[in-house]
Image (cartoon, rainbow, N blue to C red; front, top):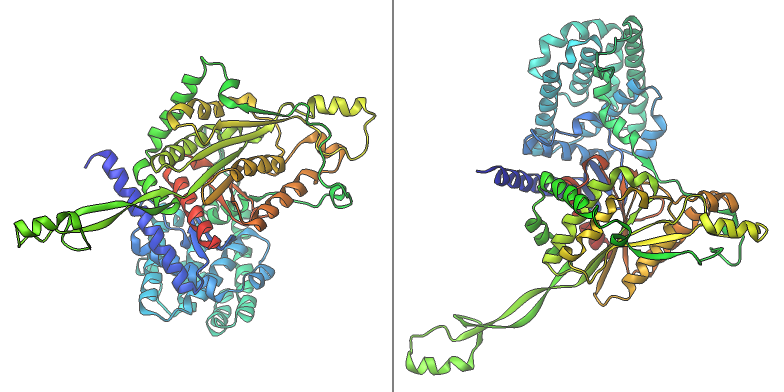
Length: 575
């Protein structure tokens, strides 16, 4: 098997595992809205915070059974844990939070009663324990403390023995903790069916662990920096990876504008004199485009996304079967009158029938609307590769696709701001900058012809400020004129609307308020399906359907799978 075949086989395995685990999650969690996208569990459009470290097996090495154990654990957490009650009882210190999260997860897992689920959970715990031991974390006092707590508390809550390989290793630490911890453990098992009472006992255990962690850290001198100047992660840092990842994912800022709320005229624009709709390829010097194109091609080649497989998935989602005639010479079906003479010539002839032929027909059109504000510069290459792959796959199944972008023609208002000042700076002028709406590729242009436009995404000087609401209106108006049954708009952004001049002259929430109103209006009308891809950002304050993309893995198979999942979920919710 060659490298390409091996990569394809691995991709298919990952996809199958995710689909099976998502189905298991929905079945065991008794909620059809549950789904797995990226490293996150969604209920409908809401992300569920499940921060126990053992719920996230290493994608490259974990077995299918280990993934099943993790998804079963997630389902039990959703089924048996009141998230609001859990958040209200959450301690402040990182070490106490970690233990509190793990104890609540163990409580939910202890309520499983199906033999297969119990076996999956046990296997996942054993796999996680071996991963922990192999990492070398137990070689530090802090690492062995946390490991011992996890082994001992799980054993007490579930009634199962600790992992055999750990017995001798944790014995000394367990003995040292017996005096302070021993009297707290029975309550964990006794109250496991009562979350509120269990939380009180779990909180005492978590606070005891935090005291021990603080004492260990106080005894250890600060670690010297290595020669490269970068501090190494501590054992405890690695344990908190899941929680840290969740903390790093921000939520898009949203607010109500006093100017808009109290205004009868609604959203306003001071002047449209300088607004432009531009073809992006024309904004880049021709001699630069081949280099940009080559960079995208190299990134696409490196990520090695299977475009043919992606096209098949998109065809199943966005195309419908349409009758296109008949196939003759069948042994069953509708009698074919034109072949009856054969029956006379050959009485044993059986191929006298015809069957209806169906071919897929594109029933949707898709628009990607890309935020071209300054903070998006760092994502241009990965994002261009991501869109390049989708455009090629959509073209294979004849689904029309546009890639649009939005930015401003200047920083800090430009000519619009100067005109406002010349006019005496009237109050509440509305949007106060000049807009550039960019067409990277329109729906009528093929990928081969339009790839220079996609390459223009790499031109850094295009990226300034963002007036999102008007850009969404513009993209939606282009979609509204299409004839396809389904119209889908995907907004890609890493932040909230921002334009300094508009915020200063109105209020800081002016553009945010408008974006929220525009999206709510489109969602309510139902003619266009609208969703958002947040690059490391939760866009739910604006978009009912949204997905957080890992901004470090743009262009790769994982981000492609995530968007397919969002499309599947959006189409499922729409019906």
